[in-house]
Image (spheres, rainbow, N blue to C red):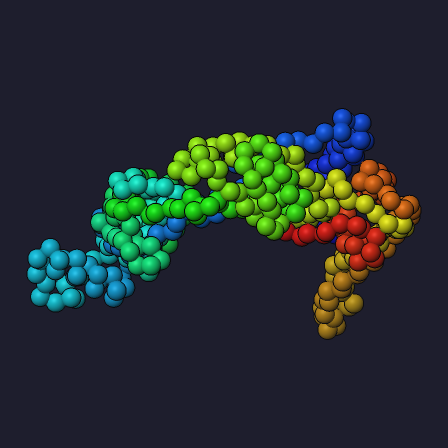
Length: 377
């Protein structure tokens, strides 16, 4: 049998009990669904974040930089750009510099002069970026255009110390962050829709929800129709052609009735966590549960067959004892159209552990009895 700890068993048992209580209470609630705002479940197509990336040098490190040739070359180019003189590239042997990759996320509608947070990560063999300062570096969009400039002191959020073969680390110090470390140099233009309307993209594909969103927008704001399971086309009224922000404000605050998710059972085998959706049903099935425990015990003894004077030798002897304990099996029958409450009650009756419960659910799915998607994360 798979091992488990008492805490895990207690947690899953409590979870099953709570789920069973919810299943028994929910049928008695009033028949009305929760409402959702469109701004919480959808976004306007084309209104999104943009990613920037750049290459730079971090200086001021306390002998924790890298020794790569590319870093030395970049340092030499930096010195030459400031009219410095080097007799030989090998003159740069210090490990106080590190080559880094810089990344940043530009939110929609960011303007020239707006600050951005940046992440700085070591490229070569630098052991730490703690205490370093990023030299002014360009951040480019995927099309190669320079969008922002980054510079400033790095914050690693911890420390890493290595001395005499011993080391102590409180955080990963080869990556660091610079809050407001970049400044936008140009605006990334974001278009809201086209000449006639805009597309709303739902956070998940759901034909029922897309239909409800289109119906609710048509009823309260403007003509709309669902194009597919995740896209709703909304037409601009004449009075909002040149005032699209005000129109979007009205659209995103429209509410729709929530839809029920697909019946699903989610399993995390690493932690023993199991979540069973409310729409999970079972076809007729019988579940048996039992276990066999095999224990092997070894006792080491010493045998001395004769005296040492007569050539006797001391011999080690291992005596093994094997015992088999077979737990009483259980058989629970589930009828047609069994509900979540029936499933929870049956599993609790079997007294299954988290590991065994995962095996039971997988077996039910393989047998075609579990009417739900089984997802293992």
